[in-house]
Length: 237
Image (cartoon, rainbow, N blue to C red; front, top):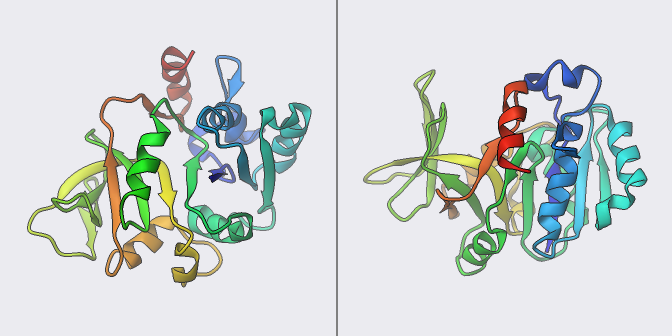
């Protein structure tokens, strides 16, 4: 199985560090977020990884070269001309993938989740994508039906919501930025240029199953703000 680490974002929440560095190189106990996620994937036998770059791209490329790809096979997807967001970045990298399901992972998410369990859940379902979710407090929720099929989203701050699949009841779950995706998605993406993978999912839930894999026991942290680095260093030694 192959994987993509999304590392092209500007990391505005992580200023002032990202004024001079990409967020992928933020350090947690002596290891960058990028290194930790490459090693996390490798611990499950996933060593063919593509990393997209935009913000201070040469720092990421030089780090990968200096550290001999951290023991994995790393390919760079160059987005220096324009940051394409999660969906556009994935579409740009489509030629890297073969005809097998693959992993999409945000570089600023750290977890000790058993990746094999969510992979198995995806492979034994008819889902186009399987998303790691949990019951936790957040501002933005994904909405699932009683079978854990994605139906829409809700923002509790703005009271906005979008529902593209009807259900008798909707269950709020927080997304952790880990996806298992079937390659058929590339034939279904109609958007071009800069777009979010979430917008793709919202379009596709009308006709395809995108399911949630609920994990409330594993460690997860979004290292998106300076104060979250100290918390991450307590959790991930």
